Length: 496
Figure 1 (cartoon, rainbow, N blue to C red):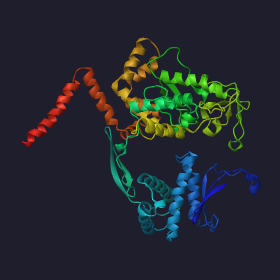
Figure 2 (spheres, one colour; figure 1 turned 135 degrees about the vertical axis):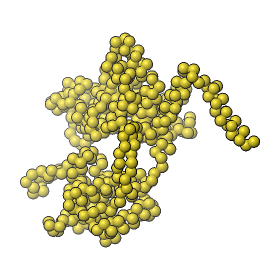
Figure 3 (tube, rainbow, N blue to C red; figure 1 turned 180 degrees about the vertical axis):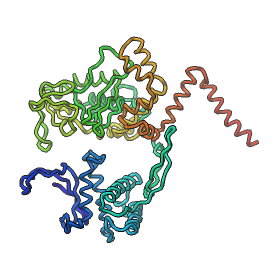
Figure 4 (cartoon, rainbow, N blue to C red; figure 1 turned 45 degrees about the horizontal axis):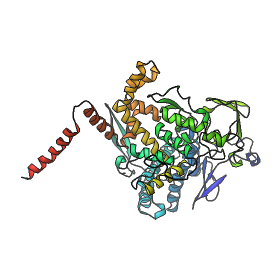
């Protein structure tokens, strides 16, 4: 076990290694990396009839995987939020499951502490709201299970409209107001996206060599362009296996090519299919067959001991292979397992590898340094690029094409030639938001709509409307300019 200490509560993360020496009859059923909170006296309980509050908290933490939170990375966030709250209350003589008036007084003081207290204690509004959400989940569970009689939060009823549906839901009054989500641009416009891809390849804005002497430029350019083109999350494109790439069609096509996203690396472990353009898939194949092969084939790389023993692969194909002699499907392999895979010819099985054939995972650093270089040498306005910005860019670019009819036109062309009729029909008939929902892997189109509103979805429809007007001569650029001038002429007339 390893731990993080606080003044009154210790947070440890469970590891089952060596459980045989703990004088236990069976291995503990606590999941590996599960956080456990312990009071400063290192005792879990004094009275079995009236256990300490942290006993209830630890039970709640252990139940997170079956209550909608299966990802180990999120468990620590939940535990730290509860720990900080419990420590704050304990320092003021308030129990975690105390009376409502005392809890409300503690919550009021805690809100001020987190908003205006010492610098290292302050939380941004979004982080505070996350903590409030976590604590409300804990208290609802504790009341339902009989550990608490009440909770410190007050709720109001809000009305939610979506299409022709109306619903009411409770809103926690402790939530802080935050700026409108769309006020900050979180995606790359087409010209900036092209500038970014060229810089990843070591090229300047004009497409010529910018004399940058970075390493693995073919890898960075191919994978970075594919991330913008597919909407894959950081974990998804980082741990994609080279053998999982779909085959390149025999001839170029205007329609995108389906790209499976394995459940083992997808968020929520939900399999989905996104897509990739012919050109970007061809770039990935070229990288795999040339630069990657030079680095990985025959490499003596082996995973470090701290990762675990190597997983040696033989008889590999797109869907699976023999791992240490046993046939395994790639589909369910998690990132920690994928980075331990050793290819039949040597080197890592991951698509992106280092010069020594080992797995490359430092994409945030590559993207950040590339953006910094663009700002310093070419474009001072260029934004910081974190990996998830590529997903936002994919969403906006894809929606623009769906709304403008680009994919419908391509689908009709393919349909006329009897090629991939299923995808052609899907693109020709499906609603743009439904298509984007499937590509992004959202649970509902409502999630997709809320997501897009944070990225200025209205601009997409406005641009498509104006472009259609020009294409069909419903309104020209000159007419639009005159109409806009007329609006200001009316303002001048009012002055007189």
